[in-house]
Image (cartoon, rainbow, N blue to C red; front, side):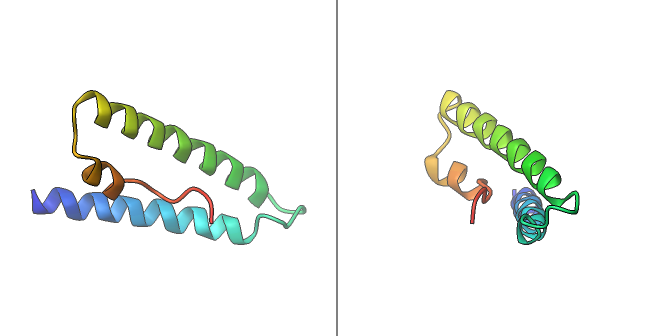
Length: 74
């Protein structure tokens, strides 16, 4: 159980750092950063929607769902 929590925390941290990295370069219109940021944001929104729906469907504690949520917008 403790290993799975560490893996979840690591995955959330990596996703948040990746989004933050491209969010900082979002306004540079001469690079690919806006396109990558859009793609990563949409992918994260889909992940969060699946997480919430699966959590509600399986009667998971809302605290556990909140713990596994990622940042989308800063």
